[in-house]
Image (cartoon, rainbow, N blue to C red; front, side):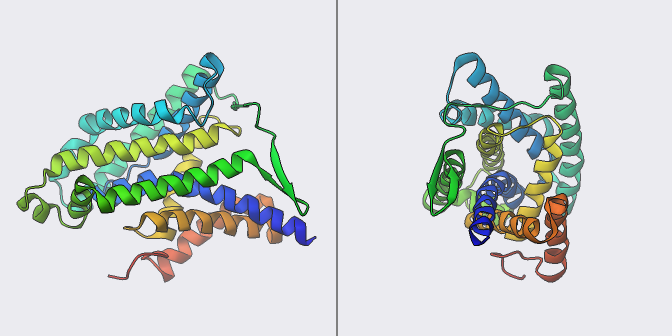
Length: 291
């Protein structure tokens, strides 16, 4: 019985790593520009389809496909920003959030329906030869894909944190996120900083899309992934890359514990309950500071 409980918690940590990756790009965009891009889930879903077709048409390994998907999604993010979001930068913070929410919700609906028209609503999955491989010890089973998801989450979080804290452009992004007017007075091109930040945020959607593609997915997954990203951001708080990862792990473990005690039927409800509780009791999140 104890082994079964530990096994469920392991799967909770694996899911949590995915949730952390799902929330990372959205947290970056919202933290820097106050843009609430709820189309983030649809972009992750499209990355899953990109990984699927690369695997089935060109036999590209899912994890290696990140070398192609991430740069392409960066360019996609730049295009989306220039067309839809560039004009919002002149608005006050609250207005930027509201307008970006409306625009991105429309984009979410368009992308989800477009994918349904192009590829139908059928369930799909990428099945490489190692899809069923597991590591076994003490009666526990840890899938190779789950290990890859955790490693991806940790490595991407470390690289993003190093980029934001150690590079000149990364420091400019942090400065613009804290006070864009002061950053502009210090010689930082805020427009370019916003453009590149949005591109990075969309590029980060490509990575969880690869992990999602290794299980079943369809166009309706866009809405579920957006919900997960929003819950993770609330759990994490704004301003900490590792906080987003911690928020993902917290959500994954909470869902696993919920499955243990109340059943899998209410798994999705657990995230919404945490969302409300943190908004009421700790709105700054796990790693944020109360203002």
